[in-house]
Image (cartoon, rainbow, N blue to C red):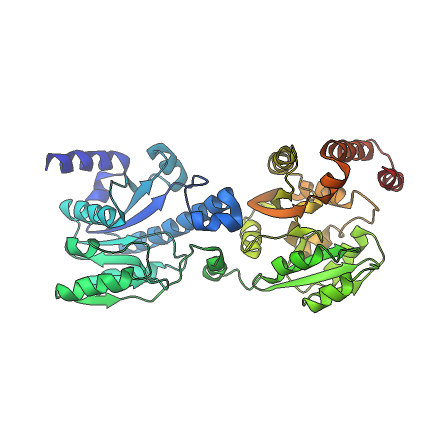
Length: 452
């Protein structure tokens, strides 16, 4: 009992004494979004930073939902059981109106039970435990779970992967958290079998999808209501028969997207390949700016994404695009850059490009620039330049507002660096940028670039 008193004092200092005394409590199990330590099954598609980025937003969405329930109920409190990070970091991130405790030792069952035991020891009459993996969780579902405890001993919210996203109790029942194969598709079934063996009455809420793997990513758009926003991916191409198939496959794997390939006069199989894979194909005068503007003119989506023909998009790219553009201050976005080459020094090139994009807000075209179609035409599209069209377009965008970089990488071909050399490409690029800023005409620059 002395241990319980000590921990209760610690909790009160983190939240408020009145919150501890509330009759109902929802406990949210969360992890501080440290790259590489959260949502690890998403890392192959989105990278460590991208997985942590999504986990942060999923946690914020869950806490907003639980706060909505708390404020409607009145006699209710929210506790966050966290892993990773420090108390100060959690409070600055999620707010000071919540109770915070670090998760204790043991497997998931041990940690769930410890939260239940503590809640009832502090006088709570009803408690619900939830995770942050089901973005469709609503305040009304939470309310239904608490209300169902009038008749049931246990209320479970089934997840469609075989687990559960919530469990609500009106008294402590430790057997429900022991001997369960956590992390498997049998968690819900095993829990129901334990409940039946104890003679407990069980109520079930609506089943929800969770997000653990790359193929689950569209659920985020469905839950947030953004899936209806179509993404039109415009790909200017010229003799790209080798690189284009993989690029188009990455595009067409997305949900509610279209691929528009604008050919500038290819002499290889570019056009035939694009059509065979299901892309809309246009023919335009050569010149990347003209090709991209022609593709934007034919696009049907609310969102435009301009992609080089040798750059592959990550699985779930459309989810990242819609999320970035949902931020009120963001006028456009791009992805982090990853180069498909193992040359010495190539990772330094990547880091430099990503630093420039993130802190200077100046992505280049090979990072997949995206924005809303109406803003694109407000700016008049890409300037009709033979070179530096993306540079000049981004300069205009920066005057409009924030250009956000999704911490999710696109993979671009390393052929330029392999063919010409890392140092030579870097020096050449910087020389062209400097010359352009000094007023050298784009026509002269493109002649010089081709000669080099």
